[in-house]
Image (cartoon, rainbow, N blue to C red; front, top):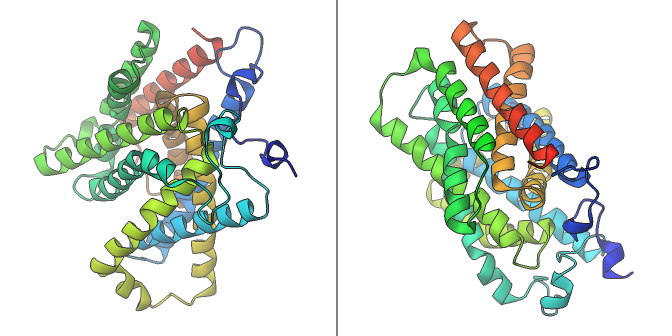
Length: 339
């Protein structure tokens, strides 16, 4: 079986040859599919994680992340061993050295992608810490400013510039976020600082994916594999020394079949989500990925309210969420039309 035959339909290959949505589009069909896939996986993962963390009160978020990473790496190892996927892009087949070793990728490629792994670890650690110091409305408000940091880092790292219309749509998103959280603007310097740092690490992570993904010779599967191989051992040590592994072993519901099923679904959906993030960011852009995150939040709020309830009605929140959705829709329209 040739390497071209091993690439699954949604693996990153020759993006330039992908067909547009319709004549004159700036976003390809595969790019649009990647964006929709990301939002679907993200919403489902939130629901599964809520079942594990809230319904069962499982206290060890780092262990969940570790299990998700182990699952992702194991699935990739099996698919690669069975020649069902490739780790290289079309261009990478001509530039990367032999990948027949047990780790599949040359050592120099792991070194080259290590900034992505460092960015991922910082993004993961700060993301978990950021929600503890502020209320949920204020957390949502501050997290949506990630789009601004993403635009800044795209310009610094890649030289990407955006049109006034895109900048205006991002401004509407940020305005909507602050309107939505206006009734909860209680000042907490430490909490604010942690969320802002989390936004910066998120922007760096997404921008690093876009930059390394297009220059490493690796497709989305290859980048995910490097992330798992480099970050997995570090996260294992982190969970051990923080005491979370011991807490997990003594968790009362550990052997509950339903809890294990929810954990398994969470791990499998995390694999799909990580792939969708890499695919969406490499096919489209880091900013598109961030905008999709805002759209995902809108659907998560609605579905979460329908399934779990508990969301108080507030006209400012409704207006703010509507502004954010409108801004994200305007951005999506601009990208589709290629302006």
